[in-house]
Image (cartoon, rainbow, N blue to C red; front, side, top):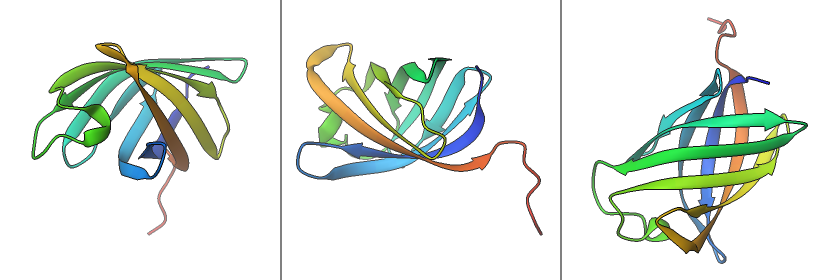
Length: 116
């Protein structure tokens, strides 16, 4: 199943929110970013099981502590798909001990007509 949607992303550590950004899910591709990183990857959705592999690249400012000092890394994520909100868990491929949690919130269909 392919989605064509805009989502906000919140990165969560054990104690607090550690930043956020936006992603577009379109035709099994992921494109997004925030003020320090951009994200390019792919996802698969089968029976409400969401799996993603994302190449994350630092391009500006300080590195986010949740990612460590890596300038580029692969993020593997899994979770249950929900049409309003998804909670995903994953690891950085280059540092598997670093577990990440993400909260994605749905905002819009990519090709919906915007009201003026």
